[in-house]
Length: 337
Ligand code: NAD
Ligand code: LMR
Image 1 (cartoon, protein in one colour):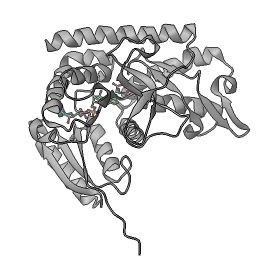
Image 2 (cartoon, rainbow, N blue to C red):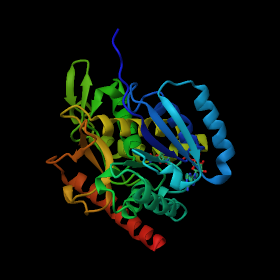
Image 3 (cartoon, rainbow, N blue to C red):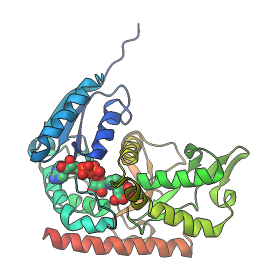
């Protein structure tokens, strides 16, 4: 018989744990979709005090899933307990937008949550903690979180644009009549907002006849520069209009994809989009949390992919979304002052 040696549990925090995204997310994390089916977990669930009753129900359900990887569940409304010695933080807890709002309209309501949680990360978390901010406006909340956690390396902070990447992949795949997994290296540049730039200039699609650049497989500039862009940029709003609530199942799946690829790495030659701290690559102002193509490695590190050609159309879109992020950053800093 072969003995399977389980490693020590890792401690994973999910905030907003009584909310709708967490309801899908917790199950996927707990069954091994992110860290693998051999990695035991301690799940820490943070929500606000009035939600503790609901959270108790979520804990009961998680327990009743009878999953082998979950060694302990810690529900709490105390940030000191929640952030203690964590390896990974999935910061979901924040107010969602309603129909007619832009995500940045949530800034005043949500940014202080991330100021407080940045301080808590700084004080209580492991210095190696990997952070993904999901609560909107995600990029700017991540920037504030990073600013208030100076003891943690800036490269450990990210915001979620994987949902936008998945949306873009699906649009291209559907147009070409193939599966989403057949579309590679679509890039989301910039902000998780309606100014984001979904870019297919470096993407390929695996057709029944073999792989092709997306721009050759879809030889329609008007579609790629207008309809495709608008559909991806406005997809969150379209879901809210239809569901009367913001996306949750697809958001949870995207969080799993983001953290799994960060934790485990992606194959050489492929990349994924993550909003991370800019080092000045591609002319993006240093210190902004901007979505870039990144190549991740199995040691949980990543590098912004360098040397991709940027034409005038792409440059103007990348600059427009950067301008919005600068404006959001300045507003957020004044809210937190
Ligand atoms: P929800 O209202 O269903 O749940 C949010 C939960 O967060 C609630 O249980 C609430 O009590 C909790 N919460 C509020 N303040 C908190 C705090 N200080 N600490 C801990 N928990 C707190 O909302 P949802 O649908 O789960 O969405 C959560 C956030 O994610 C929203 O801001 C939404 O806009 C955002 N979102 C982002 C993406 C993305 O791709 N980046 C996708 C979908 C949703
Ligand atoms: C999304 O992209 O679906 C989320 O950010 C929710 C929203 O407000 O659009």
